[in-house]
Amino acid sequence: MINKSNIGEVSIEQKDFKVTIKQKEEHITQVLSAPMPTQSGAYTPQPAISNPQQQATLPSSSAPEKSKTAESAAANLVTIKSPMIGTFYRKSSPDKPNFVEPGDEVAPGKVVCIIEAMKLFNEIESEIGGKVVKVLVEDASPVEYDQPLFLVEPA
Picture (spheres, helix red, strand yellow):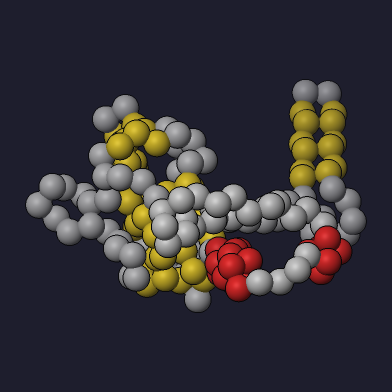
């Protein structure tokens, strides 16, 4: 009923009873990549474009076109983030294989890593289906809440 209406939140309060219903918000994750170094190894910063009209007025050359295609490819990627603070592990034990490698296909519910928090090992599952493009965290390293762990190209 709430989802079909334009109501964002409803609160009902009586003597010792209170109920609040909020409409679920959709969160959009946007991933941007830094420009890649040039052939000589020197870093050349690209100007930030905040307005699409400014983008049309910039002169086009082969280097910005390459960065635009890299940005458009990065914009299609979804980030799997850490739901908690803890220690990130790519495998369940030292003698086992990693849960996922770059290039592996993941499905919703597939375990992608473990995060240890206060001696509890929490399996982190993928919420999307697609192909793992990059692992952003080293094995056995500390992670923060909401820290990006994996980049996934949606299927």
